[in-house]
Length: 48
Image 1 (spheres, rainbow, N blue to C red):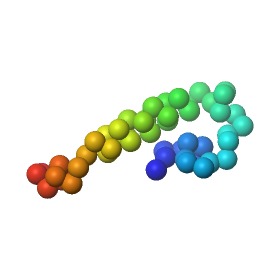
Image 2: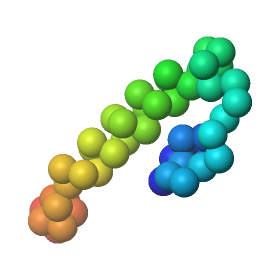
Image 3: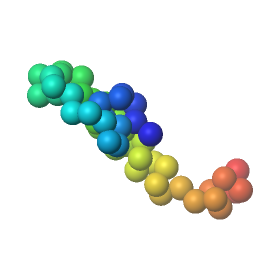
Image 4: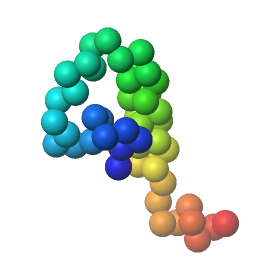
């Protein structure tokens, strides 16, 4: 799951990635989202 298509797994390389001013923001957001859900367990859902 990626917030923007150019960060999706297997995406075609984005030719303007080096000059895209928002790409670092989206990459950080994707990492935060991944890290949040990666540390969750079924038990976390059951407890709430």
